[in-house]
Amino acid sequence: MRLSTKGRYAVTAMLDLALHGGDKAVTLAEISETQGISLSYLEQLFAGLRSKMLVKGVRGPGGGYYLGKPAKDIAIADIICAVDEWVEFTRCSGNKDCRDGEVCLTHNLWDELSREIHNFLSGISLEDLVHRGGMEVGGCNKDDGGCFTTKVEKIEAA
Amino acid sequence: MRLSTKGRYAVTAMLDLALHGGDKAVTLAEISETQGISLSYLEQLFAGLRSKMLVKGVRGPGGGYYLGKPAKDIAIADIICAVDEWVEFTRCSGNKDCRDGEVCLTHNLWDELSREIHNFLSGISLEDLVHRGGMEVGGCNKDDGGCFTTKVEKIEAA
DNA sequence: AGAATTCCCTACCATTTTGCTATGTATTAA
DNA sequence: TTAATACATAGCAAAATGGTAGGGAATTCT
Image 1: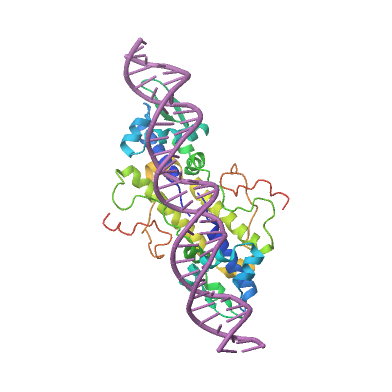
Image 2: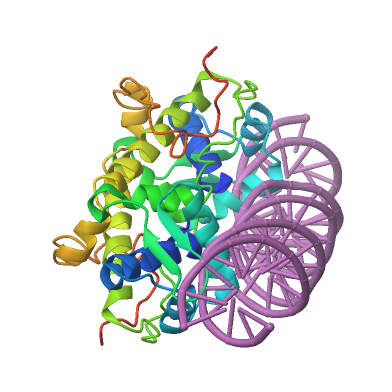
């Protein structure tokens, strides 16, 4: 299970807009520069964001991107959905290749899981991220054997 | 964002053990048959489950697999961890290519998200799944535009 | 002993997805 | 009219996914 870079790039880019945007537009070239993402790749991400009205592009010199609506009205879930497909928590494609009841038990489980994730990411707006620095991140409980943590085990020097 | 088949296969297979196991061993051939998963692939999954002591294999005729411990002591998270790598919610590999504070804001977010998922999946044991049919799955709120739901939109006839 | 049945192990492979590059066009400000 | 920007599409290498293939090794049954 993994989260694609698309999602992260998109969130950080939107964060950029929320922080440095304000009155003047932020160009993709700037974001590309400061975050080390290729311009062309960013453009693809913003195509998705545009289609969901999360950003508004202005062409020509002096142009760039603005947030499509107030930061408090943009949920992290919206951003991820816009660039990622996200789907495919189950692959039983409605065809009832879902044989017996057993399999459906796990279906319910995955359904619940995705709902859980959705609720979590829907409850955090871009503004929350800006103001609270990623919510009240507590003690960073790395006591689960590293399985659900973020792979990085040499981060203690951070 | 997606959950690999490995995780689902493993959970349903473990469910099989929990339901039909009991006194006699369940063979991979049986699981392969009833669930339409290739035997060889199942064997790979069970190698992971074995290494985490979640199952116990018995060779020879009449052999097969038992649960490694009581179903109530096996969390869904354990199963997924055993077969999936799961990691890689962020890719800032501790190298501090995590440039400025901005990026770290999202880091905290992903950290929190994985903790959220972990908590959810840790709180559900194999026994819970057996008894409660996948927890009290409520009204199946499909009101999020299909983004976080399970891709299947023709399941209403279920 | 030997054969059958099961777990165990390792290597390989086709397809899909990811993450990115390249190249071009359209629009607008100076 | 030129430069800066968004917008669009095609292609592509590497990695991950989801398997297959084939050969042991242990155990039980005959």
